[in-house]
Image (cartoon, rainbow, N blue to C red; front, side, top):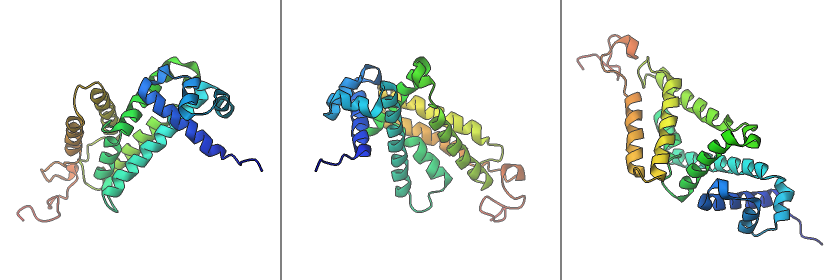
Length: 223
């Protein structure tokens, strides 16, 4: 009997080959023939599964997104059963920094995808910003939850802070890639801004998230 082919596994094999070779050479320099050689399959097989380079690139983008989600999950599991909004926000932001080979590849290729989506008509027609929008919405929700729980000041704008933190993480990632700073320095900067957001004002006024007669812990002012 002929050997049964697992088509999803074959697609995954080819997509992972794209990520590997693009991580070494840059997304702009990779063709379908390069991916076929990396995956040790024929060019015709790559074309059979993906049709065009644009479709292959989109599958590569989804692969990057799935890997990123898995890294965030690993960080959260390391934080315990109930990490809370601060730890969750930190996991989301720090997972995108290029601190090892896999995260370096993620940041390098994701940045390249963003640029290509502006200049390549086929990629521009795809919903590239869906994933960045999802990350922004997720972080905004975490900050909203923190504000509602009194973990930040009441005047904190969750959407504005989420946009700023994500832009900062993206910029820090680029600075690591080009050697401007190390991962430790970038992590310190991001944590500094998280500390700023997650440090409620200490004046005890109700407009800043505390009861009129209580301290942040709920005791009397003189306790």
